[in-house]
Structure formats: C-alpha cells, structure tokens
Amino acid sequence: MTSTPGIQTGPLAGLRVLDFGTFVAGTYNAVLLGELGAKVIKVESLEGDSSRYLGPFMAGESRAFVGWNRNKRGIALDLRNPAATEIIHKLVRNADIVTENFRPGVTKRLKLDYDTFKAINPRLIYCSSTGFGTQGPLRDRPSYDAVLQTMGGV
Image (cartoon, rainbow, N blue to C red; front, top):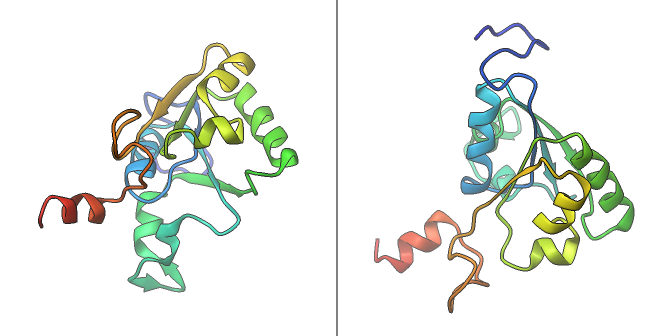
C-alpha cells in the first residue's frame, strides 16, 4: 500500500464503510478496514465520540481518538433529527459496510438498524458489536473496557 494522499490502495480499495462506533470496540474495526484501503466515514453525535475527551492531548486533540479514528472522514449529526436520518439513509445507499456498537434497541429507535438499512441497500454488510450481547440480563447496559475490567475484578 502507498501513502499517497487521496489515493486508495489495498485489498479493500473501493469499499465504502459507515462507522457509527464509539470509543475502542466500535471504532477499531473500521480503522483496520481503512488501513486496508476502504473509504471510511465516521458518523458522530454532535457531542462527538467520547474518546475525544480522553487524554493525553496533543495540539488540542485526544491521541486516543486520533489513533482509533485514523484513515477516516467524519460527519457530526443529531441522529434523533429526521433530517439527519435522511442524510444517513442516502449514505447507506452507496455503502458496502456499516459498523456500530450501540446498546440493543438504540439502532431500531433511530432507524439505523439492520432491517431499515437492508431495505435501502440489500447488499449491505452490517456489523454490530455490544459489550453484553443482545440477550440476557445485562443486554441494555452500556459497556466500555474499564467496565468489563471492573466487573472482572481488575
């Protein structure tokens, strides 16, 4: 792979990814897709990914956020706003892959779920990652690595 700005190379060149992930688990897979040549668009809330506020900082930017979101373009939208939903649905029409790590039920409420997107783009690959899975007593809890480490006694 070359590092020529604006030129996509690698085995995934030409693929388009929409990344709705936050923090590590939701964003790292899209980083890898971008490093393999895919064009990745990170979709953030207007408040921004929570990793934007995690130090250390260099030149006013979180090093963690930059590391977990390199090779991506970005857009910030109020995902509860119908106009934002319309923008997302237009992006989905041309996407190949969507990644997200919302809690179960959130994507359905926001019309960002697999069934909604599949109706728009039947060839879409949809990857969902949750901390506690989609079933069971902890399914609705938000999760970060620190939460899981604490629950494990670290």
